[in-house]
Amino acid sequence: MSFRHVLYDLWVEDARILERVKPLEEMLVEAARRTGANILHCHFHQFDPHGVTGLILIAQSHLSIHTWSEDSYAAVDLFTYSHMDPDTAVSYIREYLHPVREKITDLTRGGLPVPETDS
View 1 (tube, helix red, strand yellow):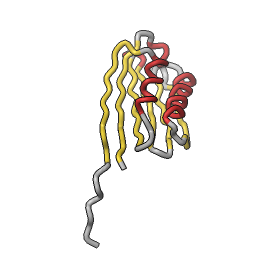
View 2 (cartoon, helix red, strand yellow):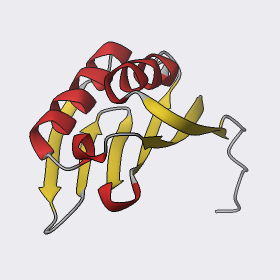
View 3 (cartoon, helix red, strand yellow):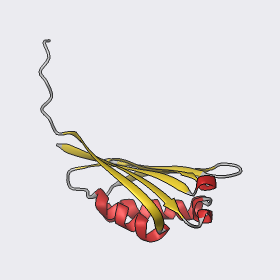
View 4 (cartoon, one colour):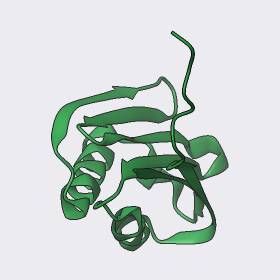
């Protein structure tokens, strides 16, 4: 089985969108839903004075977001496997946050046979 770990770095023009937990949680839940993920648990935290961190634990791995609104920056991780398409989530997040700059790093993890060990 192969796994994809997409690291999505983005910068927005209006940093206020990165400062509130509820809209970011709703966005990430919808992004997970659109990939076909089985959501197990969500946990988000508002920092004072700025920033949000959030994790959606899915049966297939996780989606997370960390924001630094003072820098207009958000880091999103999408770790999924096989039938899930993290590109769908990235597209939705892009539509929602309207980044002025972005960087996507797409990693393939696993997928190789497990080496045999001596018992």
